[in-house]
Image (tube, rainbow over all chains, first blue to last red; front, side, top):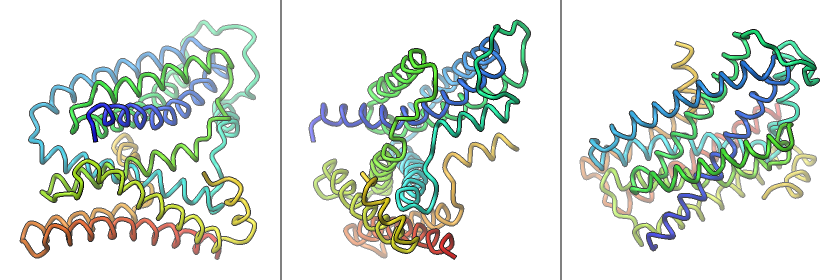
Length: 260
Length: 67
């Protein structure tokens, strides 16, 4: 596997995974802005971004002093837990066991929780709104931490932190730009399919790095990641089919039409 | 405390799956350390163990929901 292919796969993985997180954060910020006013929503967002930048700076420096095998083991465990968590949820949704994530419904639910009805405010509120500020801050911080974990997990061990960061940054800019133009939640982003793909890729990288970290030699070196992706894809397909069958014929029909 | 719970929640959705995965990783790591497994067997155990843990958890969730 060439270095450039590594770089591109890292950029693509970071982009796809981060776009899911960015869409989720955006839905909350939009709801806060619409219901409680944009001033506090944007301030909460900017505050969270500043905190995330500080975290990146601190962890970026600290990572350089960690022994490679320890880094591989820790990153492998975190990526595997993170990836399998996404994969499990996406499989259950694809099988019809769990309801699919709906950004429009999440937006409306968030609006109700903030005491509004999703109708745009007629005037911009000038007073600070602590609830709006904290809600936007919390959402962007939590989703942002997930983006940082993805970037570190995909980039740190391979020395591709810059490439992974660029992929994540591109996703955030694209999602923010789309939201600015559309001014509503990005409900058409195929979030479940993205989570399936990214869950498989992150789990494969997690297994690979953990194996390397404990001193195992993978066949075909880095190429083993592709084999792991193939194995996990097959297992995912099988798991969805069987879970859909257990769940009932209606769900099974749904899977045939919607599973990527 | 709530922040810590939120941070753990980033990695753990279903506690049983997380514990099972950590058990597989720890088991393979220990067996490799005491040289009870050769490399290829350890790799096979690592991959099949994690995939089996995921599948068992998904099918268990589907069965519970069906009931």
